[in-house]
Each structure stands twice: as structure tokens, then as C-alpha cells.
Length: 522
Image (cartoon, rainbow, N blue to C red; front, side, top):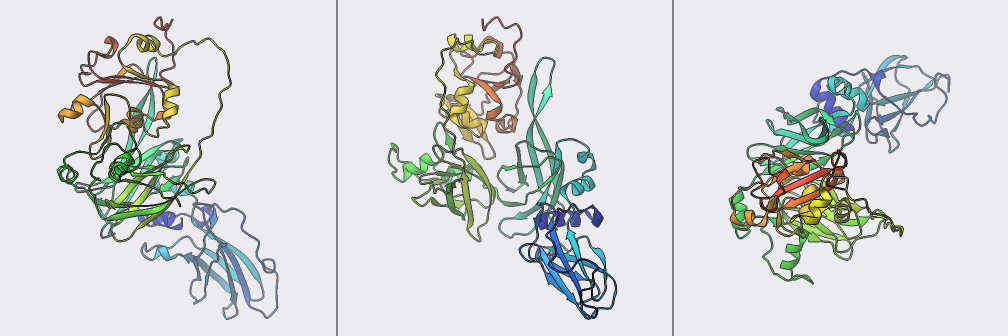
């Protein structure tokens, strides 16, 4: 984790004082106390500790130097270093350090001055500035705004591994807007453009929430990946970019069918092609999208190797399952930074960002957390119904499909579009950049026919580039209503001039649980 902090200092030429470095109590020196003569004519002893302030962990493998001399020392696994100086004259010297990753960055971390005197011993602490110090220096506006941080990194070509300039890095999350009588979820985003050295810096990114990011240019693109930003801190995320393949090329190579999923796991098609048990329709395996390979193992947090776990490259139909040792190999992948999803029955699904390159295999060990089995207490209670205006009546007499909070939790979805998989008449398709929800009849015609969305009773005018997975997450949803045509859609959801291709009404847990003299629920 040294490289992120040092990269930041180099790319911005920010000089931060050494005294600003945040350092926890280092391990005690193993020699005599500082300033205490150890041997009147003996060497000067300098012991020290190098800290990676980004993680508050010792930094191993750092080379510590004393300027103006040939004296060097290398830190051990505990971040410690040691000098025995018997050839230096007494005086004030400058001590600093560098790391193997610094050569390509051309930077020097903060230094300190020390007094060297024969026959004495002293202890020196070295380290990079803390995240708070760095964010305050680079993003002063963000540092004064609670809950905002910094994301930075380098974008490189996945084939040549050379830095790319002029690449847009987009970071998106869901924010909240307080209206007159409701709280609505709205998309938020920041973007940055890489410089000549391929570096980017994005200030003002929300922390403590789900943030997704993508790097893209006219001809190259990464996948959408999740980025976690600590409160008031920073996150380093490098990207590899692969070449975007034209949609018509993918369609031709996959037999004319675009990747879609209308109710099953992404690996089901691959399983059917292999003749897996329970597969009823044998389909041709999806065409390779590149030459990159991902290998690894899947296990539970208790160390148990998981056999039969699904491994899916998001945005594609490329998938596989783990063997009896929990191992897998997924080939034919497009190069670049991508998102891979791991699923297994009884475990919470999880996504990992992976950097795929055609030059070598990418390896990963995925850990899935076992879902706790919660036994409901047996009680007899009067059902009060939903607190969402009109929900119970529409569910009773309407023609749509209704998902309650209990239904949503049972599905175990990690993205909103996952909730619509398996609903009759609904398809979840990949359009080359995101998952979109379509009704079966509009998907079959091949004509773009967008679904009309309502969020907390108000029309959400989504454009073709809006991704509902970025707008709202499953854990924030209280209920969903799905109407497959205008004739099914209730009148209160036909005021936006749309709905011919179907209407989806999403009630958030905060916005959907309010009551405003609701007579329909009585």
C-alpha cells in the first residue's frame, strides 16, 4: 500500500511535512536508550521503523538511506531497520527511504534530520502521510465535506500495459433528495480524465456507500466495478482497458443472440452446453470474447472449499462452476478490469474486481459468507397490510406482479436488475454496457422500447444510458410492482406519457413506508 500514497504525492507535487505523518506506537528498539552512550569509542547506532500510514502497518522491503553517505539498510517484515555507523563524523544528517515501486514514479518520500554521534543510540520513525493529510492537501473542498473522499489511480492498456491519457473515469453512487413529502433516491456521479502519465484523481466521491466505477475511451473500456471509499479517506484503484468489440461482432460469433438472462443464473447456459444434469436445452457455449484467463478457488469464510459454485463474468454469458476442490478455470475472457460474481446456495453472493490481461493468467481466491439460518418464531398476529399507498389493493385486484420486502430478501439479489430475473414476461438483457429490464414482447421485436419507471410514486424519466443498478440497491427497496403493458398499468402510473412497454414501480424503504391519509389500505 506504499505505492498509492507515494503516487499521489508525486502526481500532484504536494510537499507534506514529515511531522504531519500519523504514526502508531512503533516496536521498541532493541538497543540502548536514545542518547545513552553504549561504548565511548563505539559506533553510532540508529534503529528505526518505517510505517505505511495508509494501512497503519509496517512497511517491509523499504531501503533506508542516509544522505551524503553510502549507508543503506532494508526493513524487515516488521518494518524495522538498523545501522551501525563507525565511519561517519558526528553531525546532523538527513535520513529517508524508498521502495522498489518508487523507481518508476520518480519520487522521494518525506525525510527527517537526525543527529549522529559516536557511542550513542537513537530510534527513528519514518512513514508516508496519513490518508486524512493527503485528502486535505489534494481535495480541500472534499475534506471539509462530511462523507466525501478521494479515488485515484493509473489507467493502462491491458495489452501493452502502457499508461493511457485522455481516458474518462466515472464513479457513480446513489444519493438522496428530500422533496416536499418524500425522500427520493437520485444518481450522483463524479468523473476525472487521465493525464499524460495515465493518472487520474477524483475528489468528492461519497464514502461509506456503494460506489461503482468504470474507465472508458472511444475504443477501450473496463467493466463496472465496485469501489469502497473509507469515510474522509482515499482509495487507490488502477484500471486496465481492453478493446471494445462491436456489438454486431459479438452477436455474429454467438449465433446472433445477445447475452440475456430471463430467469436463471448466468452459468445455466454454459451448464446446458456441457450436458449438465438437469439441463433441458442444449445450447452452443458462448463465443470467446478474448484470450484472458481467470483461475482460482472459491471457499467459505470458514475455509471450506465450495464445490459447484457459479463463477460469472458480469455483462457476459461466460461462466463456469467449481470442481470438487473448489477450483475453477474461466477462459475466453476480454482483457481489462472486470467484475466477476461468485454464487453458491446457502452463501451470500459476492463480486470481485479482477485485472485481466492476455499475457498471463489472473488468479483469485474468493470467499463467500454463509447466510445465517434464521428461524421465525411462530406467532398468530393480525396482518395490518403494507404501509405503501394502495399497494395491498392493487395486489389484490391488479394484473401485475408484486414483490414485497420478504420476497426481495428471499431472492438474495446484489443488484436491482437481479430482482426481475424469473418474473414471467420479463427479461434482463445486457446491452453492451449495462443490464436493462425489458418485457418479453419488446425484447423479441428487437426494437428499443424502454420500460417506464416510477420511484416512490413519482415518474423517473430515465434515459437510455441510465442504469437502475446505479440508482437504487435491493437493500433499499421495500416493494416492487411490475406491469407488462399499458392495459395492466393502473391509472395512477400512466401520467408520464410512457408505459406502452411496461411499467415498473419501485418503493424505497424510506420513501415507500410513509402514510399520507391512505384510504386504499384500509
